[in-house]
Image: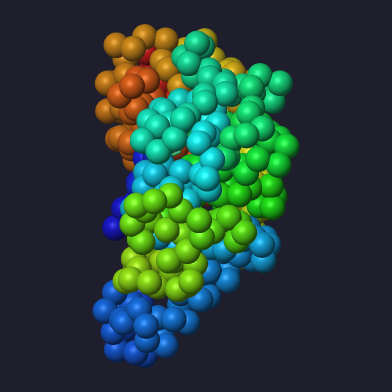
Length: 360
Ligand SMILES: *Cc1c(COP(=O)(O)O)cnc(C)c1O
């Protein structure tokens, strides 16, 4: 067996020990004689798996009792609609910060339900930075403020949590959740597709303040109502049982690593090594403003775009794969979520230096 360092933006790498545990339990979960995939989601075995995963996420992220955790389906993309459906609560408009491709999708979807005020945009600099707090033209009457703390495609990360003066703050944390400790109490809603930093695709984590649940816009399907899921421990219908189980193994893995404080330390170091390699050379460049550089998604360009193809081919020979940048940006992108071992970064940095020597 040989494993590669997979720099995919998502679905992304999972910790090897998690995959090994899942493998060892695949046919017979703890003497039940069945796979987790084959269990009734209402049986006591699966219930114990489900409850432990939720409790571990609450512990790992220090999610206060004021907030409900929902394990849903439909991806982060469904939240682009569920957020306005659940949070407008009689209001007519919402504020959105536009920092790139995912912000834009959230904005387009919200426009189906309300007036969207784009309170800041960095489109003018090709989404290479995040706006400062002082640039946000927030409306006190907005139903909520939505932003994307980490833009997965552009590799742009906010270095602060926006202050909204009491207006509920909503964050699409798909590519940054679990990368470091955050103060959950500052957020009305946090949502994330699992396939970047949580587990396999198919699970969507939503963390929502309890007092905001229960007042949807007319015509909201019950499956799009947070209350349906909050009232039923996310078991109103059949949840993505296997993805939920695997996410639980990842939460346990994070605890074993030393929790989010330790993850942050490791992530900062990993990203730091890669940015140092980019900045330390005239051959590679990062398009992103220094204080907005993502710890999780690192886009970079080569001096000569003609070399991109050779770079990808030679990288693959040393087990470094899926480094091609998003088609809208070009160049390279290394996604280095929690499960990317530090050895993967070291191997990439070494390869980059060798490639430059050969082709620079
Ligand atoms: C990947 C991603 C999405 C889309 O997630 P799906 O689960 O595929 O719907 C949305 N927002 C951000 C920031 C992402 O990284």
